[in-house]
Length: 398
Ligand SMILES: [Zn+2]
Image (cartoon, rainbow, N blue to C red):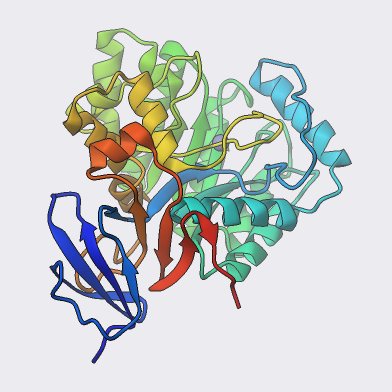
């Protein structure tokens, strides 16, 4: 059988030059360059690096203000003030989540993102409206991205009575994981908050992804509490903590006992390489056996005017902040936006190889380190075996 598409002359991460033969949604074979059949649809990838599509570990499709005129940032530098600012803004924004989130999906698909985990705000004011919008986006854009949804209690759980029931309802209605937020900093009740989150996880057998900004020894204590609950419920490998700034703010004793707890419970850490705050030390955590993956987090929203969702630039930002200079470190930064989040999210049939799904991005670079260093634009993207973006521009969809 002839392949439906051949990517010819591409360079792989290991330096081999190959033709990638695609049949339907799947990579059928990878053969030395020049050996693929000539008489079928072809994309010339000479001098381009072929990589599996990027995997977005943390995004907020419901929060973005893309599609609206630029909205100036409302000042306020604590999490609580930001939550209030966002609520104010949310009441005035006329463009629906589906329009704004759809814009963001189209933008990141053209950068080469093929799968993502989006948090969606759940509180007693917005209810499940954001979730329902994301479920519609998931259906509408099934051909561009695979979407995983975290029911996220952005306004807390204990301080917003009714949210625990909404989180439960969100999972029943299609959210994939249950989220959490600063058990101490926002709810001021570590046990009560984690009881509520893990009760939903246990009841429905779903994973957990908690935003944790709480700092220093308090944040580290919360991380160990999360690890202990993960073990107790047999949720190893299904729990992540996003941000976890505390890991960059504690002494060696605290660090090693916390990292050990996370590694034992296989709790993964998400970082976006944030601005001037401390961030989790990626290499130290890796050496301690802790998985660290990357995500964009806020993109042009009430939390940040910055960001565009390009995960290759995100890898670059993380590498820059962590002083990754040697090639193996740049390769690791790249893994933080590809294979590592793919494993955390449980993306199936991921990677470049026969039988894997044909989710591929072609980059103007000769190697993975060069791609991270330069973050070249104008990418060509294949999703489910179909050309979805050519030289950075989305192709027409049915
Ligand atoms: Zn977030």
